[in-house]
Image (cartoon, rainbow, N blue to C red; front, side, top):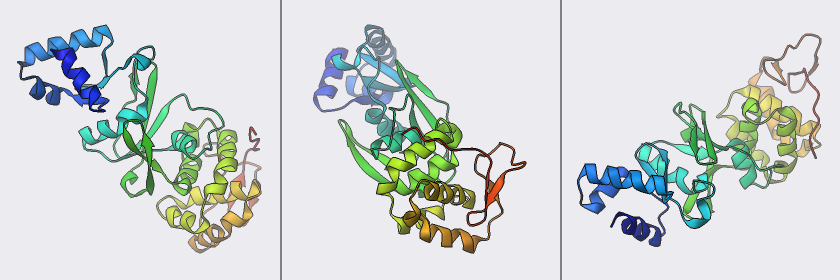
Length: 259
């Protein structure tokens, strides 16, 4: 009976369901449903990436122990009633700018959340206070759609959250591939949603990478902000570092893109 219910959900194109939803559909007692779900978990028919939230494991997914994050993150965040968007390295991959496939799926959220491990799948939640304001676009998945930061927002995020992006060299590699998708005007509009230091570092890096045409408007934006100088690589000493006068950036590290 319970496996049949899971199969019927899968036949409808569903890849996940909540405990409360399953309880209502089954018409059984809570004790019986909890016992049934426990058996289905042990048999590998379903997985539970979050308490009370289950994903349906088709044969193709059972060796991994979970469905791809893009298939369940939108439903999970709707279940939690929280804003989100796929960001950083995961967003870069959607824009064709991931030099290597990210090992962790990264989701930007407006509340601090612990990471998720489901089988071999790992999801990292990265806090961004104004996540709801960041421009996004929808990308198709086999289970529907997922919100992904725009190329401009992604560029600013990877510079602002460099510690989550495998270092500045990897960020530079991403920017080389992401640059062709960046609209200079939209870049300035999105820059207003981040600390000006993000725009300073991004402008310097894009210019260094030969994308001067992309940052003419951004340079004017930074100039009007009259920013204090910032380190190219945060948390690293700026002692003895040269300073780029236009971007007001201390060049406290060397950049070696992997491309």
